[in-house]
Image 1 (spheres, rainbow, N blue to C red):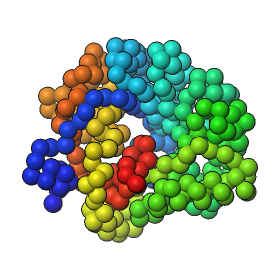
Image 2 (cartoon, rainbow, N blue to C red):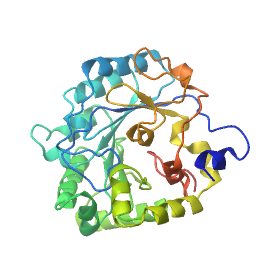
Image 3 (cartoon, rainbow, N blue to C red):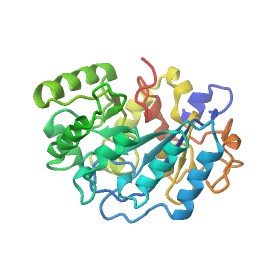
Image 4 (tube, rainbow, N blue to C red):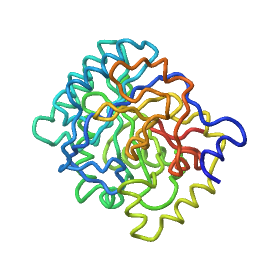
Length: 317
């Protein structure tokens, strides 16, 4: 059965609720080229959000007090020339800011003060760390990335992140292979114990995320002849209890070119909002996005498998 049919169960299609998070992908340029990256980001990508679209996103934020959080992603979003301005202006509007941060970008020229900048603006920093062991992380993100990530984590700890000062440091772990993530609470406990004892690193929480069978990870699955088995595993693990919490129900994703999507994954698949919904962020009224029909595909089984998966981690206990 299709994902749409499975979710509807003979009833209505999946519908969104009030938009609480505006997620913006401000560019696909990154200092890394991770194997699991669903954005296909790399140092060779040149796409960047234009000044016009940046202003349109901030205008939406200013006009929609119901949007509580600006979630900034990429690529490495810090490589956008207006990244710091975007953070500053969003915070001046009283919104929470979440930055999807890969840690190693701190070592790029001119980026060494990022931890202090984050702290000054009290941004939540969400950092990818596939696993707490060097080999597993480097297999997915490149040789030497684990060691560089530790440097980044130490720098964040040094300015107060992860140390109970209200500066939230979140780690994101995803499987290094074609299987579902372990129980989030268990991996958080194990990661905290290991990083604290071995490296003296602290963090606030850990989110697990399921690898989506799209883009670079899909290519790896197909090359390893694992795509059909992996999709079957996701389908078999479908959990209807995850549906109410799906991130597409309270989030809208804006591409670097201003187009609108139900989530970051749909954005990478060029699945724009359903017919009748606004297509572009310019002049967008967030109220028009409530109760819209969410576009779905077979990749959506990744968000509903097991305990569920989203930009905020698992969806059910």
